[in-house]
Image: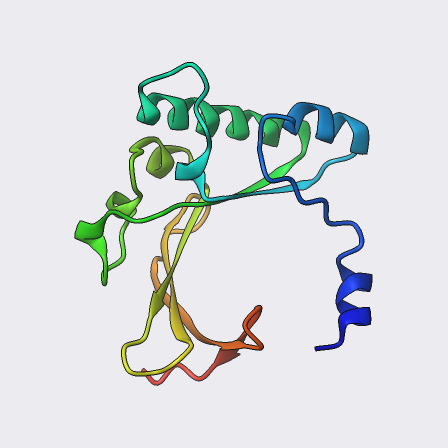
Length: 151
């Protein structure tokens, strides 16, 4: 790896291991940001026994961040029943995701091809097309490069 180059291109990335300081963190930066939540289902829900309701509350809160100019990328786990196939209904523990998401992408492992995934678009609010987009191969364990489709 070229650690110097990695540090240079990521110098404005701020990592937090929790989401509960999000408002203060965004206020301190003072500009629109890309907010990445990995994974949505692991957001701690304080004072609630209803995990699904807590997740849906966070989905709506993050959706409201777009009005302030922020871009939100939410990573969602899949229900076991949907392993090996794509579709909006596969998002774990929240029907709200399929309603609020502008673009829904899935990465699916290509069986027998080490590190190769297919990228599939299952929702795009601003474009009618859906389905297979591309094939990517993992490189150096931290980034993907587009490969040939094989289709």
